[in-house]
Amino acid sequence: MDCKCSSNAWKWQVAFSLLLCSWGWVSGQLHYSVPEESDPGTVVGNIAQDLGLNLANIITRRLSLGSEGSSKYFNIDQIHGALIIQERIDRESLCGSRSSCLLHLEVVAENPLELFSLEIEILDINDNYPIFSVTDQVIKITEQFTSPGVRFPLPTAKDLDVGKNGVRHYSLNLNPYFSLSEKHRNDGVLIAELILEKTLDREEKSEHKLILTAIDGGEPPRSGSTQIIIIVLDINDNAPVFDQGSYKVELIENLPPKTVVIKLNATDLDEGANSEILYSFDDHTLNSAKEIFNLNEITGEIFMKGTVDFEVATMYELFVKAVDKGSPTLEGRCVVKVEVQDMNDNVPEIIFTSKNNKVPENAPLGTVVGFITVRDRDFGTNGEINLKIPANLPFKCQPTSNRYTLVTSGHLDREKVSQYTITLIASDLGSPPLSSQ
Image (cartoon, rainbow, N blue to C red; front, side, top):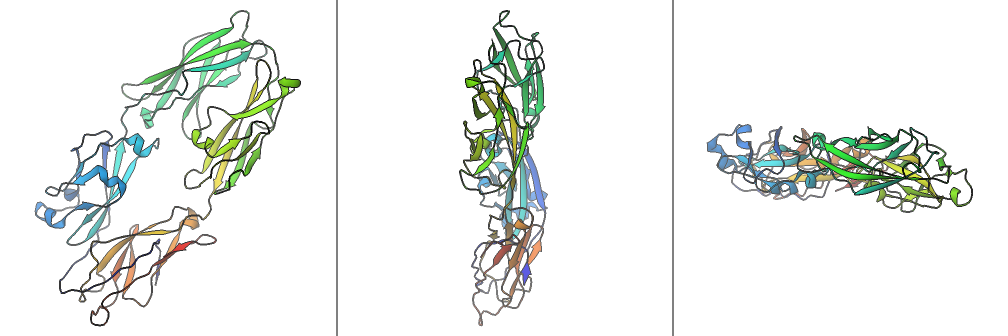
């Protein structure tokens, strides 16, 4: 008999006794939300009440949380059935910069055995300031040869908070030479650029000092600042230019290190040292991308440094600058967008949940033995799974919501068979398929 699921190796013994047991399943999901940094002892919600249990049944049902890592932050009051925080939760360390922070737990009730899904949303509070990675950013601009309208990337502030508590605005002190432009990167992060509004004259003023401030959207808002130093220089009047302003590359995941992704080419119309170019990633390239990709500063080749994993990230943006060796240096910029293609590289897995390994021989058909949760980190057909259970056994698995229930499908006779070993085989629909048992 076949049913869709995911796999791991199990051995399930059915031992019989004269005790009568009843097993049950109720589908559904509980959802609670709680602000991060809430004090231990804070009540998140009353699980027993929301499940419809009365006070007389709470102790006998023995509510408990599953053994997943997130359960360490909570416990269940065995008298009143309330879900209580037992360890302070830092949303940023738990979920990073993800916009949604959800903890998925399972509540197990006994007598009869029932399994419930519990989803806890950790709400962000504005407890972090925007921070720049540098205290001073130096930009060199050639006098007269740099026309108004030219843009220069500015350092990006990081705020560990998310949503409205993250960076929402940049500001620049008023001056007649420069203005500020803001835009969102593909990942939603707000970045700033400096725009030249008036031609610079080194003899008039050789240095400009500006203050760039990042402001978050919290109440009250928090802010952080960095200094932008503009050095006005002359000489070297041609900047490197890339063949394209934007490149698009498609990669399959799990490519070996040193695989060349793309070879960039920038040209400079100057001669000698003024035309010699060095390539590098600029400040807008995420550190996570720099851990995966490397750039040959001489040849312009971008190659694999780490391993791309579709399940971790489906796209990377590499912001590249080409800087010549003139005095002062000039630079050109481009962006390389790398799209990661999914491969069938994750084996299906099965998680089995049960509180007992004994079933009475007079158990009626459909008696619940345990619950099966299926997982495959791949996407599309690579993540679709078939579960096979031997047909000659008095057991079958039935789909229930996003899980499966292992139940009896035949009459049990301890005098004929005192225990069963059930081997489940889960295979995905990838090409080639992956399976485990």
